Amino acid sequence: MVRTAVNLRDDRRVTDAADVTFADLDLREELQRALSSLGYEEPTPIQRDAIPVLLAGRDAMAQAATGTGKTAAFALPILQLLESGHRPPEPTALVLVPTRELCMQVSEAMHRYGRDLNVRCLPIYGGQPIVRQLRELKRGVDVVIATPGRAVDHIKRGTLALDRVRVVVLDEADEMLDMGFQEDLEMILDATPTSRQTVLFSATMPSRINNIARKYLNNPARIHSESAPVAHGESPAVRQTAYMVSRANKTAALGRILDIESPVATIVFCRTRDEVNTLTETLNGRGYRAAALHGGVDQSQRERVIARLRSGSADLIVATDVAARGLDIDQLTHVVNFDVPSAPESYVHRIGRVGRAGRAGVAITLAEPREHRILKTIQRVTGNDIIIEKLPTVADLQTRRLEMTREALVEALAADDLDMFRGVVESLGDEHDFVEIALAAVRLAHEATTGPIGGDDIPDEAPPIGGDNSKKQGDRKEHGKDRLKHHGKENTKDHGKGNGKKSHSADGGGGGITRVQINLGKEAGIRPQDVVGAIANETGMKGREVGGIEISDRFTVVEVPRKRAKDVVAALSATHIRGRKPKARVLPDR
Ligand code: AMP
Image 1 (cartoon, helix red, strand yellow):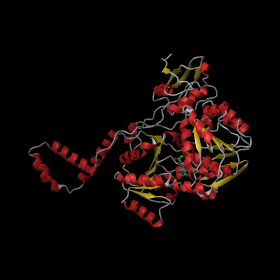
Image 2: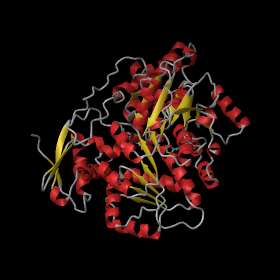
Image 3: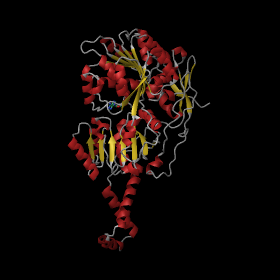
Image 4: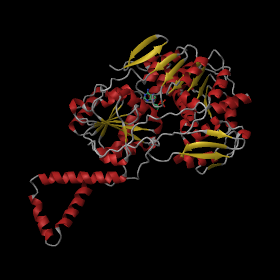
């Protein structure tokens, strides 16, 4: 059985994965309402394990990557603390995050969960006019979500009052340390009351995290919801692939993949009820035969949906985890994770729906770039090979459709009921070549069964392949070597036959490192973390993708992956660093 372990001090509490509901977590009414209106059916493992600890007021360090539901794991306990009536203007909670993007995401999530509490959240990050932030701070906020650099600016100006802060969350702590924010974090923590609750979330737990935890956390509970390792080999023999695609392109990408794979019967997993309903409608609108299954579907409707898939009158079931529990459908050939599952055990449960009794099965995961790390964790914990494939292009689809027409013709040739058409072919043969007649007939057959392929190629969001072997500044050390395997586009036509698969080598993808110069240096007060922060904020690159940084009096030189150099120059030229507008350029190779 898959179990999740929570280490509370020395005692080891083991909870059954599936049994805990949001109602069991003792969250206030307003939060329960918000969660159910968002269509969340059950807590994810990190939520199940972290929420009770945080509600009890304990300090905690939790290992969880993006995509696990970690934001709600700390946001809900924070919201639980807020008073119902009049609240003071000073913030009750401070969440520190590495990048502007995450700052906005956390703030939006907090807002959604705290809707019925009228929570006042304020994201504060560099690059945004400080005046607006000042106005909002004066008006009063409950939760401040800040990047460390900008939080320090406010503290120094005396514009961020932290004396009423009861909870501080360090979100993506490893990333913040990678970006060189250690000093800033310490300064911020020192400015908050010592009675505060301190919570640290991190995708990895290098020793630097432990150092900061020793100094600032008080007897923290260690939460590690990655679960007891799923026994290797427990997963069925299923071909497992993933596609990296942005949220906006997911539905279109799913359509393309289904067309290429042409599954017999598929189950598509979504996180929430709303996602199930929306995706079902969209797929039906695009000519697939999809049926929805979620916690709000009653038993008789559920049976109808399953019967439709069994009889072939539906090709796809779109479902939440809760609703799919106990489903056992022999016909299933494909499982699609419309999002990366929140935990490895959930991945294993999902893909266990196919590949039963030695039958072939395929598991496909659509991952947003930011979910790459949880995908890697799933691969590591389950010991499964998940191959990253390139999204099918329009040309791939055309080829696949022609293949399908060919297969249909082979079948028609094998049947012996073609005689009624003989007269047509023979009479045409008087005036036309037989190959030309066949060509015209194939075209008619092809067009009759396949419509046009709408749209253009969908951008593939696979992360750059290849190690960044740049020198690293200070304690920023190299990560990301154990990348998932990537496959080139040539494999999309290779339907699991196990031939012709070529994976890129670790330093494939070409590129290497190049240097970008910025015309600001020590004299302008530039620090490494400002440069990394500006690059990460403006380009979406990870802090660790940025290489060595040399700061002289008037200039800064930073190493970046060659293929991102243009983006970095454009982004830096369009932003402010320490209040100054930098000029950036790529330096010629040495
Ligand atoms: P996070 O790891 O916090 O970035 O969350 C990843 C995604 O999961 C977000 O889109 C959340 O809205 C969603 N999510 C978080 N918790 C749940 C839950 N219990 N059920 C369904 N979706 C969730």
